[in-house]
Amino acid sequence: RMPDPPASLPAAWAEIDALILDQQLTAALARLDLLLPAAPRESPDRLRALIRATQVRDALSGAESALRALAEAREEWPEEPKGRLVVELFYAASLTRYLDQNSYEISKRERVVKPSGPAADLAADLRALTRDEITSAAFDAYARAWTLRDSFAADPLASPRRPRAAAPPLR
Image (cartoon, rainbow, N blue to C red; front, side):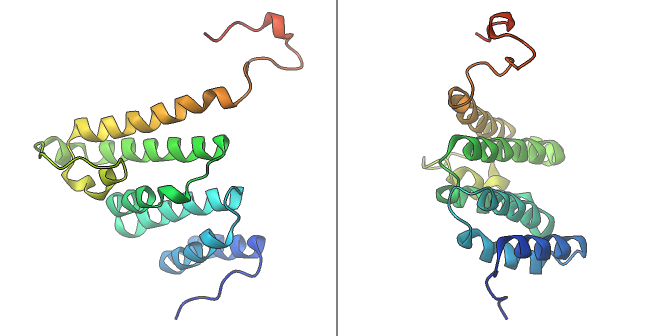
């Protein structure tokens, strides 16, 4: 039986957090899958649901399926710079963690020639990728995050206690 859609976002988050604490990850994932489309597109709740669902999938079925689901949900990723930055950094860090945790098995893999396709295909066959290919995918995600840096304050070192003229240039 599918759970009912969330009545309110704070109540839904309280329920999801309680399910995760009780190790009822399948039920928590079902609630997250309902919460994701219910949350406004550019809201922090949607971003939180996307990342939490990936973490729960990782715990339930492993990094391969979790990263595949995250990559396939690329159209659900926020467009606004701060949310996009968070997801890109999370994706890159998840790829890096997968590489670290499975380095012995990954080091035995040989490169297989595949038809070229969109970047989302990269996570679709994560078990077949070599160390270089996974590293390249992580670097690509970090590079996409880096391009978002101009969307934020021009000088993050400036503060009310530090005059702008005293802040060293970043570039």
